[in-house]
Length: 381
Ligand code: GAF
Image (cartoon, rainbow, N blue to C red):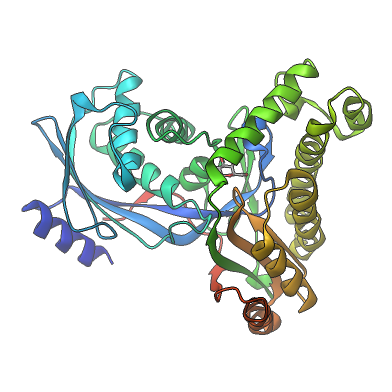
């Protein structure tokens, strides 16, 4: 991969890169739609990464090329970058350069070539991987002295303000802060993280990723509406964010809310509590105990938060019926991927059962990947 990316960079940009960097996609084990409520999540990095070859330019131009693009180089003037001005995939890397300058950092142009193995549109944070790989490369090339959480905030700001997607900070934190062999216990308010060992192999387990290959159109508008609903609920309860509501206070709080906001609040509060329980079980060396929490989390996303869909529900149901210890959708929802925690010797049977259930329902075949807790963003060449 490294030799190919280096060779492609030289072919496209006509000179050698100064370095190569990689940033991973992620699955979130539990803690969905909690990040923009200042809450907790437990993501882990995937082995699939966005790889970047980069070289600084001194003429103020940003020249972007992607192995997954249409073959053309997108040429932009760094000083002219503005929200909404860049369409398609290029808005993620360009947004990071813009966001760094918005922080008052003296960054200039660069030749960039990107090549990603993170499947796009699968809910596995392919866009965060693009942002984060550019953020870590710029940090090093321009000697910015930014810590990892600050890079995640820059990448999130690029996605919010430049690309116009109102996401939280989980995906970017996972991409820059995860470490091999661990899940990342993330506090989305303080950005404090704790590496929680997640030894799947040692416990005879595997984590399957079942990519439904569907992404329903309502995703963007619906995500923004859910986020606004949560913020509204927090305001009505006199809280800075829903993170400040404990499980024991939930019954009283629900009684003070309009009916439409009740299920949203119930999901967020119970989901934060599930993250705590899941992290405890992992830290105690009992990863199999994650199973029931995953399935419970999916029920909450389906019944209360309303972000699952027929394909993700069927994948969860079929995986659990075939012997998975637990399963749930991962990421924003409305399609995307399901994770299933399985005993290693049952992995193939679970994958087959989900594929057969999809065929029976007239859905296209899911793609099956394996999630192995992998390293966060780093220099690779
Ligand atoms: C998407 C967002 F980008 C994240 O910030 C997070 O809110 C997630 O949906 C839901 O947990 O991946």
